[in-house]
Length: 442
Image (cartoon, rainbow, N blue to C red; front, side, top):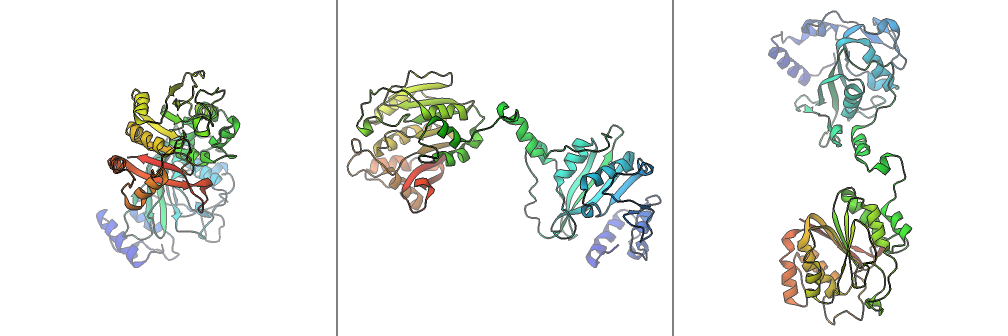
């Protein structure tokens, strides 16, 4: 037992607490091994196993290889004080330990978890304990802890995070830490000779909760691929907004959200085309319906798209040139989770829509304004503060500045409801003009 002075002090404290002699020298043996220590703690006679018999072990066996019959169901307790991390074939080594144990046998393991690079083949995650011993072998995990080499550090209990779809991150673990755990093998443990198919818990949760077409193994298209499929200018051949949106919208993808897009097809009065133009397609709406499989999708446009029918789509026709028009058209709408303004891109249209609709956004929702770098001449008001400049003033000073003080005051009244405001340049290239705004609601 190679224990330093600080370690000996803590061991003496533990011995006293267990009403055992604190004289550390009484527990040592000349060859440095631990049989004397274990015997004086109350363990029955101890047998040892090693790859080689050069240190006079009781049993020789290579843990990389299956266990011989004479060692199966032989031991009440197996202690691994740092061996399996040096065994290349870890799955076989774990299977060997399992089969060495009698029914109701106990396995005690202390192996490196973090800070031990170069010490052995592996450092072990607590995930291995829960997935192999608990899930695959049906054993009882009696304790699982992160234990520092520094005995003054408190041990950290590690629960089964994988079942909740999370991970034990080990944040803040500085220096060398062991993974210490104790498991009990019940009589109804899974005694199959060898286990080959064990999955990490957080991934298993994701697969179980994935949409059916994903869990069935069918190809799952990204939002950019869907945009390209339906011919939306938001995809790889256009503005590339979907690269950003695919990241932002992932938490919403399988939820029954309410999603609204303003501006449904390129063209219209902002390009000198009649609002009563003939419309034959809805590229982005088709994209959203396929991407958000449980969402209610609302489309708003100055042109008529009422011909398009889908059980999760509703259409609102609105001329956004005045704020009363926007209020009248949207007053009956429910609370919204995501709003995208891809309408005329006129500054006062964008700003009046934001002032009207941002209050309808649910907490945690996203409000997005596209194409900040272009405003249509038929609509743009002379001297008005552009929407990009308006939100840049907020980013710089945490207060909105506008050519119309009344508009500035209305925007400033909404500041407490904004938890984040982000402006991205054209195609995400730093030197280019502001192009897309994302506001996150508190």
